[in-house]
Amino acid sequence: MKSIRLTGAFLIVCVLFSACTGSKSKEKSTQPEQQKEQSGEWISLFNGKNLDDWRIKFTGSELGENYKNTFRVKDGVLRISYENWDEWNGEFGHIFYKKPFSSYVLRLEYRFVGEQIKGGPGWAIRNNGVMLHCQPPKTMTVDQDFPVSIETQLLGGNGTDPRTTGNVCTPGTNIVMDGELITQHCITSSSQTYHGDQWVTIEIEVHGGKVVRNSINGEVVFEYHKPQLDKEDEKTRNWMKVRDKTGLIVTKGYIALQAETHPTEFRNIEIKVLDK
Image (cartoon, rainbow, N blue to C red; front, top):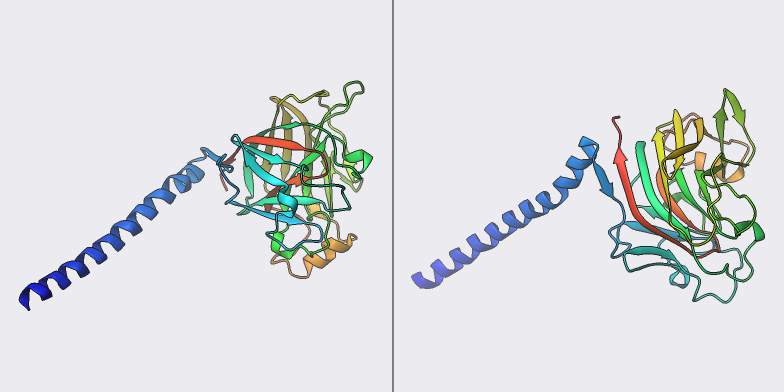
C-alpha cells in the first residue's frame, strides 16, 4: 500500500511539473514576438506554411469560409488562385490578419500571374490591394463587397500602356491631401509601371490617423493625411452603429489583402510596429 501511495504522489508531482513547464514553454514561445513588437523589429505576418493567423471573408459567404479554396499557400507564397472557379459572379474576397494595428510600417512583395477569371470586371485586370485600417471582419455583412478601409491599390501593367501602382482607393472612407478633403474614390500615385509577372516591393508607413506614405521599390509615390470615415456611405453608416469609437478619423484597424478576380501572389509579408 505504501508503494502505491508513493507512485500516486509521484504521478501527481509529474503532472503538476509538466503543466508548469508547458505553461512556461508557451510563454517563451510568444514572448519573442511581443518583444520584437515592442522594440520595433520586423515581424513576419505570414509564416509561409499556412493561413492560421488570417481570417477570410468573401461576398455572399460567412466569415471563415475560403470560397473555392481561393486563398492558399504553396512554396512559401500566399496565392490568390482561381483554378477552381468557372466564372466570377461578384464574389470579392479579403483575407485579414488576426489583429489590428495603428502605427507601423508594412512591407511585402507581390506579383500578378496568369489570366483573370472569366466574368471579372475590366478594371480588375492585374488589380489587387492592401486594405488598411479595416473594420473588424466580424462586423461585415454577408453580402458586403469591401470592408470599410483605406486601400493601397496594387496594379500591374498590360505590357504597353502606363499604369501606376501604390495608388489609393477609399471604400467607405475619405482622405486629406494638401489640406483638402478628397472624396474621389481612387487617386493615382507617381509610380512607374511594372509590366509582366515581376515581383514588386511595396512599403506602407502608417502613423495612426495622421499620415500614410506608400513606397514602391524604395521610392515614395503617394502621401496622404487624416484617413477618415465617409458618413455618406451606407456600409460605413452600418459599421458606425457598432463601432467602439466616436469621430470620423480612423486611427487603427485590420490589415487585409484582396481577391479581386486576377491571380496574385504575395510573399515576405512583414510589419514593424512604430512607437505609440
